[in-house]
Length: 297
Image 1 (cartoon, rainbow, N blue to C red):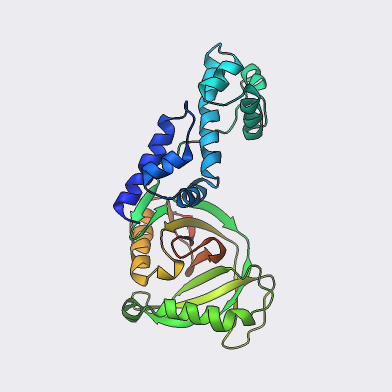
Image 2: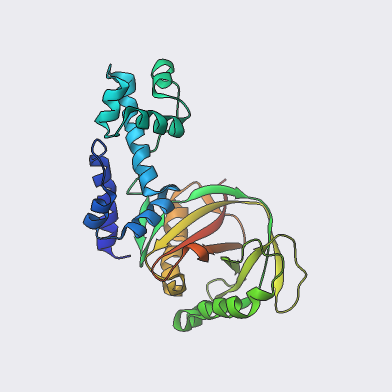
């Protein structure tokens, strides 16, 4: 993702914020951004878990809370102020968003979660994509099965060894794996070696519902319950174009910038990359990077 595209995305977020009291035309926003509506929809889904339309509606409703609590404007006036076509449209949207009506909220002053403006400083341009600030999760124990190889970093940089291994796995070995939870979800498990500056073990694999028996060259592993920092990478390119050079930039940011400035530290001998290939295409990809973490002493 180039600098112009990143700038367009940031400007789009600012434009939406400036137009919350106007009818927001998503076609117009897409045209001004120079990014297709489809790509914008995917980006907003990646950023917020919501469609662009849901994000805009949530921002309008969240901003309207000020008028509800701090003015004597009628519900109809507030609906018109935020460009809802009908009063009932505003009321129904409000109730779906907050599980309370505008009148009930005005009377009770209840605490409700709002839709925050996307923080344009929460994502960083790296290579041909964006990486978002991580979300923290605890993932229960799970099972994977795949093929494992030692990857020498210099060779990988020159020959894209991991890409070739991943394609071999997808074509030749994935169909042989039983009990797959979701065959479209690719996991790249990186297991740290005794000399991680020189090489690591890399295991293209898929999650399975049970621990499958080892059937060489297929190997099964148990990934224990763990707390993770999960970074999302988003790019306007095919997932097969994520090169080792691009990954080095991502991991330099995660391990040399992010981890050194937080209260967390790396907690285990591995990390993994996860791609849902069913939502990727020739010109779009999302990849989640799971880093095992623990609090610094």
